[in-house]
Amino acid sequence: MRILCCVKRVPAPGAKINVTEDGQAVETAHLGFTTSPHEECAVEEAVQIAERTGGEVTVLTVGPPEAEEQLRYAASVGCHNLVLVPTEATSSSCSSLDPQRTASIITEAVESLEADGGVFDLILFGNESADSGGFQVGVRVAHALGRPIVNGIKGIDVADDGITARRAVDAGFEVYELPRPAVLGIKEGINLPRYPTMKGRLASKKAEMAAMDLDADNGGQTMVKLHRPAETVKETAILGTDEDAAPAIVDLLEEIGVL
Image (cartoon, rainbow, N blue to C red; front, side, top):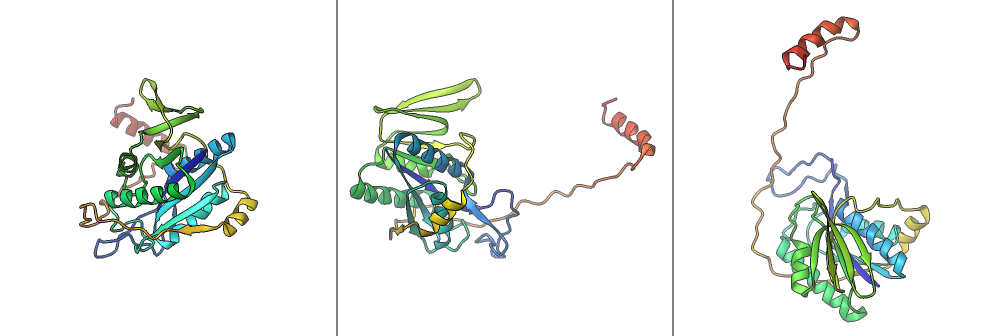
């Protein structure tokens, strides 16, 4: 079974994000980068499926040269083939690549890879990226390739004649039967991504990486300016450090209506 997993280099979740003075880019001087969490789970799911079926996993990213780090991490946990479509953007995740343009480049990359090695039975995307959260790229690629797609996936079963995918809803799960080839948007929580072993890390440094020189026209979206929301400052009052604080605590509980 041939599986393609598309990933994105994003600022580490939880990090404080600063922007440049002109508001056109993320300040990366003291910022760490990682694979978008939904896509990290997609990589793990792809590797698990390949292990069960004797398949092969190709991981692809469209991004700056520094995104090689995310591809090699994927190799360290079991991916077989690495493909980088380099862009002129800096290491910041914000670039001139809008969702339409990104999807067009990935579509062209998929068609090229399939022309050389055969059709991918399954293409996995993250449900959405951790930085822009557009929910668009996977859907656009699937539409361009003429393949079925379901987003928000929390479970996958692979059979000879198709794929069963489960999506969590308030009442339980929706179950989808898709023919192969298919595209799925993976949601964080479908699995617990493994940590790379020392052997895996060493092997990933030697893994061959293919670079594809591709581009596409802008999709029409233009970034105007980045800005950080205003920070909320909260004051903390210490009511006491011993039993003398008890009356103040009672007064506070009465004030907020608990007592």
